[in-house]
Length: 288
Image (tube, rainbow, N blue to C red; front, side, top):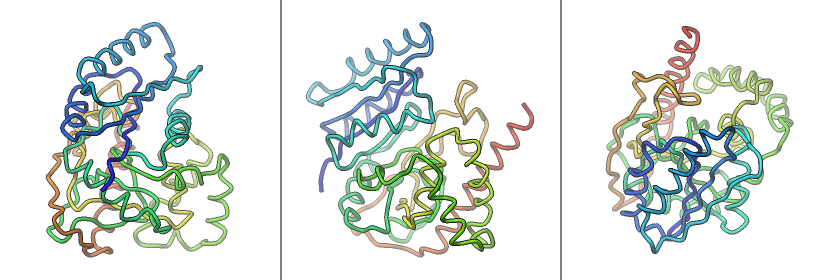
């Protein structure tokens, strides 16, 4: 099983960075790319200096670290294209974390094993460590046609670079599958994706739309491997401090024998949890 390189996207928050680095050190990861967006002001510039200091003082010395900074501010919409573009100039796969996504040890081994296992499977486009609290005693993983949010995930260069800048892929998908909105599991998300074409605010929804439109599923563990500690007031999207999805408990995944459990039931449960998260965020936003 290969030891996949890690990419961490950072900007101004450092409160959980040491906890993330501690888990990386335990996992004996040997190569890390750090992506730091260009600061919008001097206050953020100072916060970024602290981020670099935390990395330098806590990450094991034998780990090869590269830091990538764009020459202008990219924002949440474009920074992932910039950062993963840099990473995929060198590597053909990557494990991706952000400043508030705290992994456990099972996350790294799960991503490594799934990246190896599905490397040549064109029906799989992404590996995720967060399943929003889905639990099953059967097997080790399941697949889903929709994957959101991407709190700790992994993918291959070939899958990522297939994305188009425009939304022509989505218009084509909707034209070819006009009745998808009637699907009892996917139907809720289609109007959300349709509206997003006009908003186009972030990378993650577009990535999920790309995977769905190109018939690429995501692989998820049967227990949650990531805790998102970013449900705070200064968060970009998860400014819901008392959400049921804040700091989800993560569990150790037994991987002695990788088997595939009931696909339909677990995907159905996972999609229901995404729907609850969307509804939660929408209600809080309307009260602001």
